[in-house]
Length: 512
Image (tube, rainbow, N blue to C red; front, side, top):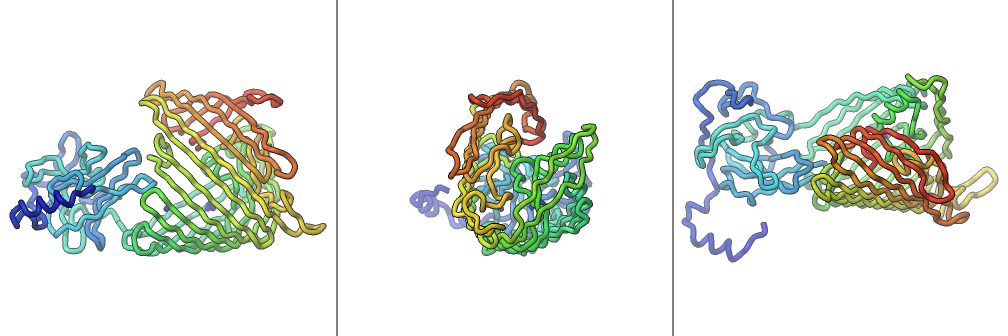
């Protein structure tokens, strides 16, 4: 619970007047011959099912499904730049039915089809392929194409292949380990069917063995008007929150804490309610507003245990400034990355403005720009530029009203240094109400699954009333597999006045 044809009018008119009337009617389904062998057929090591054999033929998660507007075709392709569906329903026209891409790499489009048998393929960046989620394969008699994907459309559903289970209900169970909660066991039940505009429900709970306390999350979100146009939602929760989730993921942090007694997050409890609204502008732009009212409480370290490390102890979990935090935030995001986990092309730009009240008053703006460039088949360049500013901070203190940096809650300040930020700088050694950060990496593909990396980290966090920007520079080399799931870094401070040894670190996920 660590808590989105180019068309020519003249050409169209000319074509319409030149064709006979029968050519202008909607295409009709044609019978499909999948061979004379009864039962599944093994062709080149693949099992192919006759379209008329219904029992046991079930599509994959993204196989075609029937929705109110027709048949929904979906294709998962994070690296694809253009996807269309071609078939007997559009005379195999590559430009007739383009799919739209979501930022998670799922492409989709809806085609209105009459009941009957239809054949189709996906055109992915110009190459035609079968639907990887549809096991029904055969021949299209109308065009004499063989080795195509087949569907049988009924009056209200897809008859073949049988749906995977489109009304998505999932149950997730997870376990994590860190120095505050020790072991946390969590379960989450989710339901969503965005295509039919059903509410998305999330109900979860967990037990913290270290705090001996139940955690929970209950949320509902409603898509409005279309699958991805407007979302509104509310939630109630009691969670273990961390401002360091951007540095390192849950699994990676659990692994380091469990094996090496290194916990790279700080924690506090957040209990409250929230509401949000999100507006999708195409497949790349999201605008959102978020409101929350929550109580923040300090949590203490409860363990130093780890499999390795001898007498090593984990860091103390710092106390937070306790109280009620109410905030309203505006968020804008532009995302054209070709992959969420391992991008090689595209932009990610995110900006947030937050106005906080309750026991803590402040105004904060944060911007994050990332650029991914594939320079050649073997050379990749990644860049991140980030900055933030907090101002107009006020709150009551033990000796009167506080203002400026002292009024900003400890858990809401900017911190740089260490994992996820500057790799040769001590963990969270830079703090302030201002922050700038730049990271650049050049990756070179040496072998099929081995890359050499040269990187630099530049940044500073400072208190505006007491100091000025003083950029610190780290640089180093690294070695990783092609998707960054295993990496070793060797980093050193490079600017004058800062001395230090080479910092060696290992990661099992990309830093940005």
